[in-house]
Length: 464
Image (cartoon, rainbow, N blue to C red; front, side, top):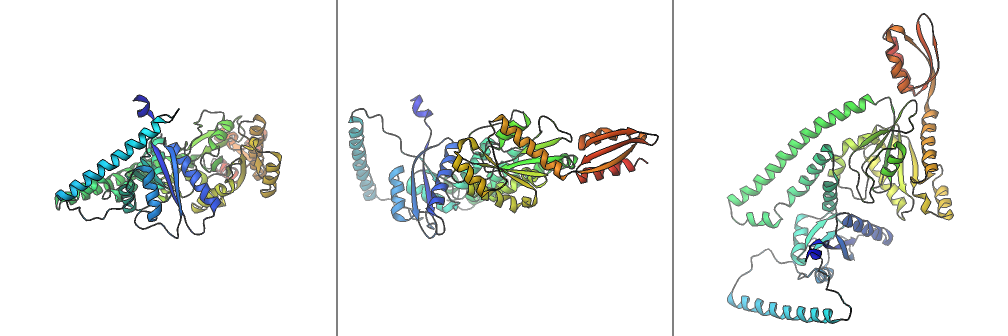
């Protein structure tokens, strides 16, 4: 019994191939949905796929495919009408007889399976249906009625993963907003919500009360996030003139592995989707002068719910305000081009496509010479590296420093003796090439970014 309780829930994946979606993209979407489902701890028991011009309005799938799905989950495969069933003695007798027939058939089938030599106990029927589309509450409810299983759509799966992986206070608040916005329109369709609507007056008032509580809670959460984001904005403003690199890319592409390799810090690295939801900022190691800050960001994915994109605005701001973006792509993934396009689309959506960027194909050690040559041809100037190779980490560090060095300018700066406290700021934000002293103060020859040089000159002149 303990083993049975420990066994993961089994799920069936459901997807509709819409016009304009190629077979390759459809297969890729299903594979990615499987990874999302396994990240939640479910076991994928099977897949039901159908070509349609649009999702069926009632229950996503057509009548035949719906019955195929129900056969896997043990449901009836029919969407019952909304009208209440008329209960009579004759109907009750007929239902009891059908139940007895069905039970006898199941027992015979079970006896046949258990009697097979070497056969183990039959696997439990899948109790979860995962739909690779955003579906309406009524579609979800109809699928539940037809299959007898719990139904989640793609948005619900991603929200649930975010909810489990959020660690910082800000991430937890952001995920709770997205979760409440997802749950609110589904209250009426949930079994509990449906039950409370049966009567007039109090039942309806209870539903409205739940929704008002959710609205009030969301407003409260937004106020808390606004306060946190104000602190983050002030912190980012303090780093305004510093050299900043943001790691961006598809979820599970290896951003956190590069964060750990470049900064020599212990950050979470897991082979799971959305393992990182919190922004982490660390200095590039060994430290350079001026210092370079590296930030890890939340990963992107196809059909990322807009509520989550909006909720993680502060995380994406790290990309928007970076000096350099490193697009991290899993070179070993067959869908790498599509993943790169998703990254570009999301960054374009927030206006970060104008930030200077370098393309980094990670896990290049898994490629053969032909694949590497093809990638280098298709993406001139891209870096093909592995976060687990020390020489590759050193090569990326050198490429980052070279990028910033190319953007730097030389300048002379006079720091009056009355403003000697500025010297530490100078060394923090620029390279000091030479240092001399006379009656006026300290003469410095610098190399740094134009913005940092201009700020240091303003600070020095203010003391004269």
